[in-house]
Image (cartoon, rainbow, N blue to C red; front, side, top):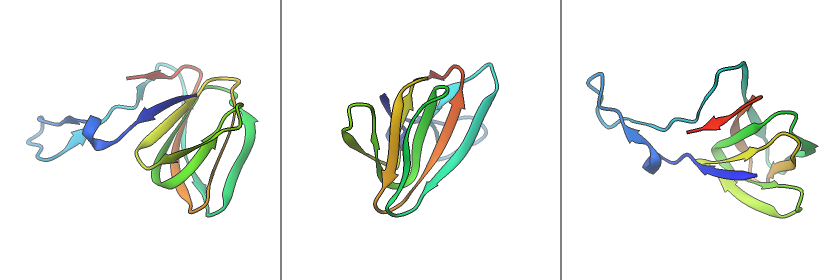
Length: 112
């Protein structure tokens, strides 16, 4: 798995459109169909161990939780952080306090 940061300090300031104090952090580019949705994990919830059918980008939007790969090590993940699982990688995610994550799934994910 690959960890990615999506915090504001990595965003670029938007200068167009008479913008002020606005910033943009690109996630990815795609040329084929993409499935985009939210996962809501309630307190003490878990999405059980499974293989990624296609590459999956999991970005925590709110809250904090953990992810675990095939090595069985739980790694803390919080708002502004993301993880990319490649096709076929077994993984699990959960939270003791609850979290909301944006999930992007596609045959090819090109992070920018």
